[in-house]
Length: 352
Image (cartoon, rainbow, N blue to C red; front, top):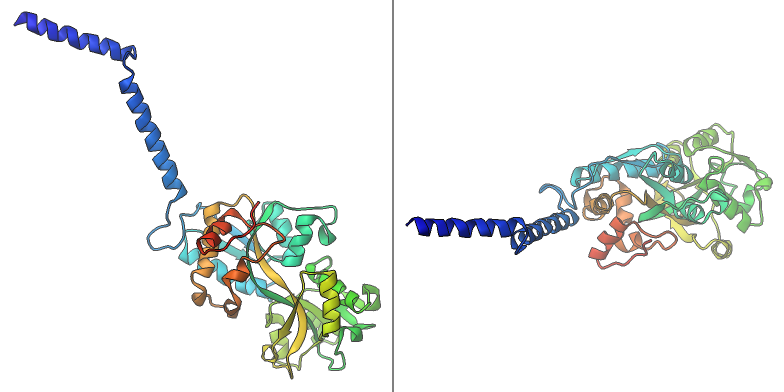
């Protein structure tokens, strides 16, 4: 009995010695394999993590995204605030819309790290990405496209029924937007199509709200307002005065499109401001862009929060949203999070 017990003890000690020295390696290898499998599973879960059960999209980063828009009487701020609220309510990503300085200012705010998302005109984001016009010698390309939302019309607003075409602006006092703004360059482009320059008018540099107030007070004759029609500032003016929109004819629109292909012919319906008739002009796209380093899931959620629930957006601009149009930008590549969403919808977009 003692001999048998001794034999068992010796066998157990030998096995322990082999394991401690790594003789067979089986125990340590199994532990390593288990740890690696656990790590792989954790990584996989992180990549495909889902938002809480009552949310759509994916689990967000937990960071608040600041979304710069435009003046408080413009479409950027009105629609941007609605979008931010819906994305925050429906997804695991929190977005806060704030008043911004328009396209150029919004891109600069993102570049400075003061915002993660911004509303921009398609022409201005092209300027920034390529270092031209507004961004001559100051190229900014650390941002990506999220989605094109709607068309922004170049609205040349006046209270004078005798100002019918761009040519009639010669010698008039005209607001061309804030100094150095995207509106300013839109004004230059439209004037140029009629062989006019900024020197052929008496320019003032005012926001939409200030432009409307100055027009109402008789201080200016017309104003360039580039925003989705109807625009709050113009709607307010049309509530008390007869408003007229200066039109562009087909010949000059074709000339403008040839020089600046980001413009598209657009007809503003008369119902927008109780006009006598529809008004023909040009438009650029209103696009949301984001810093490149914003979390992929957050951008996915931003797009999903809009396009998976268009009907619940509390703004008339929802009627212009279209998934194909959202994925139509070619001037600036898309953010990976947006590309992931569009890919799930069968749409391919350019990425960095």
